[in-house]
Image (tube, rainbow, N blue to C red; front, side):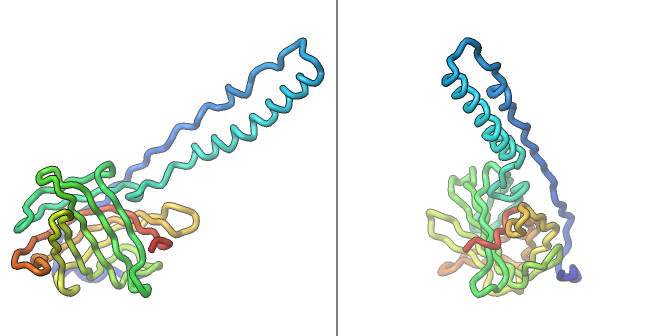
Length: 222
């Protein structure tokens, strides 16, 4: 477990939201509770009994699947909130229904990278944030991590990226398991950047002073 470091370079007032959406159990046994018909031949009666007996095990499988809430593609409660300034100036308030999320190990096991993307209603362009945490490992928990951050304006071919890990950090506030295998996690935190992200092959920049997010980390993804 990585111990939290000092926050001398950054200050914030960010929180992590909890959201649980339990699914109701399916009422499926009613379809299997019909009384056995009378007056049937022995052969037909035996067939009916066999069909009724087969119905109940199948119902148990269906009920078991219904009890397990599906793993959402952005973790337990996906969201992104940020104000952008500069070459892209907009207010982003994305929730679970807006976001597309991916989170995976970086090549050669050098930490992780998180991808959060959605369409900006103001411009109609898809904006993609890629947040790389080189020092985040399987045993990491809430702490502060230096980061490389990239913003892509898809469709227009514009890229804005930090040249190194000196300008931005991520305060990881929670890492919550989503499966028993310990491979999928909901990860939430706040990104702080003290200087703008310069445009790659351009002269403009985008400032992201504070970006709050909750996304998905899948250690089996590649």
